[in-house]
Length: 115
Image 1 (tube, one colour):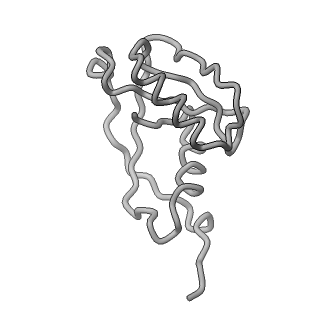
Image 2 (cartoon, rainbow, N blue to C red):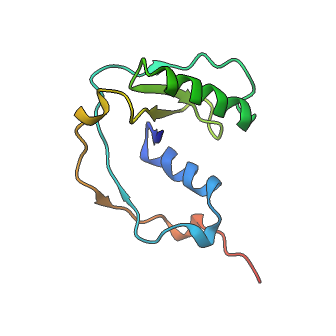
């Protein structure tokens, strides 16, 4: 499963909450793709903070293989959305991606940890 965000700013927030500062790459790039159809909206009814439940839901969705993309609310900013892409879907290889562009994360967002 490929995790994407509906905005570059949301992708930055996702990166910051999922990686410790010392694992955030200094040579980031971003790319974008337009989908032919609006992503299917997730109908998950549980707690978004329940990682096991959301992962089970995502696995069931990906295994079903009925849609290329699934729109899911961000746990960080629930009124914004991430998009899950299913690389096993037949339309995945038809997606056209932009060329990767360099991106520098503002260093003020990376907290320094003391030893």
